[in-house]
Image (tube, rainbow, N blue to C red; front, side):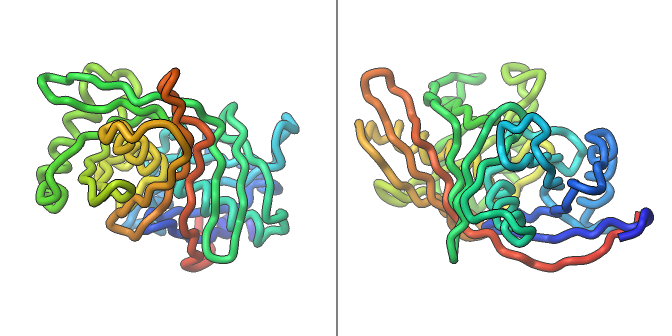
Length: 275
């Protein structure tokens, strides 16, 4: 690569697509990456993606690598689960072992890259909180980024115009300021399967999948069913495919822990973007 181009890899996880690049020798600043994100992510004038991911060494030596993630508008995301799976598979192609740790902000995650899927272990203990927002019953679930979950009828999941309208309403609601929130609309299929559509903050639209939203939706579905204590695995069906979330529920303090996200990480193409 020369100074006028950026070598990148395009990947997708259940339809959530990302641009990844190795920043270990480039050493682009956080500000520069934030500036590049809207250009690269633009679907008409750039490569097109739901986010930009830079792979870096961890200078603090807390983890093997750092995942620096920017939304298409250049803003920071708390965590991106589908992006993390793509990051893990990408790291292995650059010489990383199939099991390693990586840092996102101040949180350390574990990655396990398998033949047909990638598992991300979340350093997270969380709760499902019931809230009333302007007469609407929603579930607030923090999964190292902000999410609300709205149970809806299956037919409503097909009305994307209405989903965008409702998603924008909750995402920008005063209750969730200043950060705003991601908004998940779910409809249960059975005890351990849920259909999901997510309105993503930073993308400001529906996406084909959202990993942290899938986790939030799985925990919310467990909560709504009052499914009790133990270890659980839920399949979350999204427009771009399906992912799994694994977790433990402690009925005594109503906390969810040992949270994992499992799903595909697919290489789409490589190229050079002319800066």
